[in-house]
Length: 116
Image: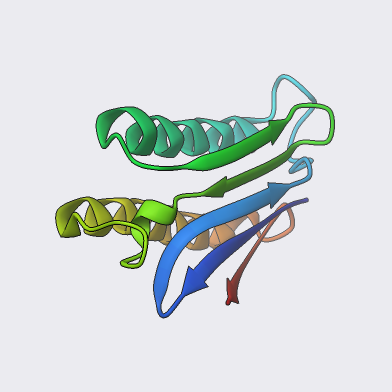
């Protein structure tokens, strides 16, 4: 099972931590794992390259742990309001997308929110 914990501060999503293999299919043929990986990389590339946003991330291939923190989604770290809304919206969109996937893949995916 893959567990995804989203980081939220003052109602704003600014990152997430993913851990574990989904177990939906064999390694290399797991479409759910491939979908999560693809969405995660899209978010990272969009924040870092397209939005030139401040994002810290760590990807550990051996343990499948991925941590993403886009502090630019928070008002205390980013003065550009449009960038903040765009980055926070992107991460929030991922949260809602994963919740949609839970309807069919609840045995392979867990999604939570951690407020700090």
